[in-house]
Amino acid sequence: MVDANELKAVIRKKLEEGADAFLCLVDEEGSAVPALVTVADSPDLERVSVSGARYPLGKLLIELLREYPGRRFAVLARGCDERALVELAKLEQVDLDRVELVGLACSAEAAKACGWRKPYARRVHLGETAEPAPEREAIEELESLSDRERLRFWEEHFSRCIKCYGCRNVCPMCFCEDCALENPQLVEPGVVPPEFPSFHLIRALDMAGRCVDCGLCEEACPAGIPLRSLYRRMQEVMEERFGYRPGEDPGRRNPLSELGTEEEIKKILGSGLES
Ligand code: SF4
Ligand code: SF4
Ligand code: SF4
Image 1 (cartoon, rainbow, N blue to C red):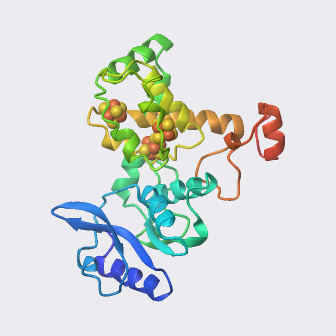
Image 2 (image 1 turned 180 degrees about the horizontal axis):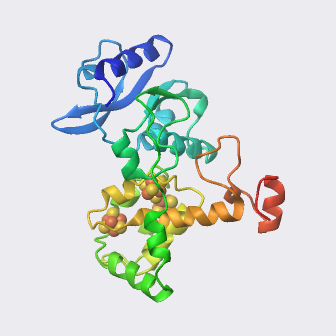
């Protein structure tokens, strides 16, 4: 676990070095909640959270950067926060020139539960980097099912959906002002569970090329629906088609932001793609 004093020292240092505010998590009545620390003697520093709790900080940064033009922020970023910020920058939602990432390595336990190939940010300032865990187990299990069985699997899971929008609300990559899931022409209001499969397909398609596989949606879902496996498979298709993984390469354009046929896009995006 990261030492709280170490984290406090890093926050103070970033403020001294010119950040106007540091976005992190603090403990409040047993929960970790986001806080913006703006001064080195802030009382928030005394309750800075070093638990394993996660929060879509990138989503908050979208608002903060808009509300405070010209201000610079530092943010505590796990590997998944960093991927979200990289992709949000490509989608022109955050300006990374005004954001400094302070990399936080996830614990071995968290890395095991996560299953991402790199459970830490590009540059780690805090914590020890853990070994990644195998990342395809859940998908392999699903792929071993026949099409009919897989349809039944999802139908069963989605029949428990209470349409709480928790998956969308927590997702760092869901930032649309007018969400398709609340468009009555696409999703009938007042119907619970929402129509299968359209409600969940809308979101899954929106997440293609965008989902950074942070798993927050699955963690938030009160119905225990394995959402991450669905979105993860979408990302695998992106990788197979375009060799692209959202959030991984800040220098590469997202293929879905290009218009054209698959062949034309592959040409625009250059080598390294499967033919
Ligand atoms: S894993 Fe879920 S919450 Fe995270 S980016 Fe993907 S869809 Fe959003
Ligand atoms: S579900 Fe789709 S439309 Fe709604 S906020 Fe997410 S990306 Fe936007
Ligand atoms: S969080 Fe779960 S229950 Fe809520 S809308 Fe999403 S899938 Fe449905």
